[in-house]
Length: 120
Image (cartoon, rainbow, N blue to C red; front, side, top):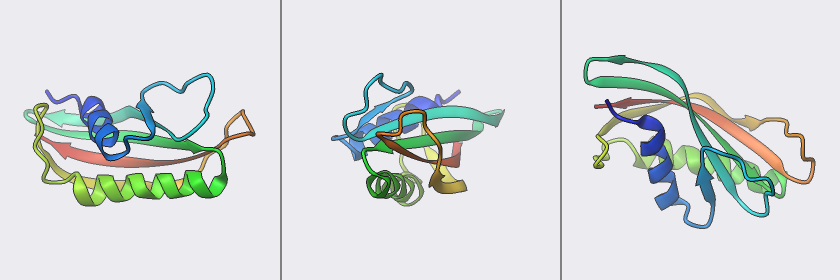
């Protein structure tokens, strides 16, 4: 079975080298941060339909939104058709487009989106 969370982590790390890409949020956010979490989905034999949540933090609302939209472009337009050591990505669908999400620290802003990946 493909680890869709790791596949997306590795992909976004390569696509956004100046951002911190992780499954954890650092205690202090000083620049761009991208968090990837698998939140559901179903597996049927060798095809996985992973639902992945991606949150993006930046110091301003404009920067956080721009980062989230860039992540969506990367996920939807460059990731499909990719074959990695972990497996191949057949399709990516946006379930929820980037939207502002509240965050306790008012010195940073967060936008997030949810995607479904079809992998084999």
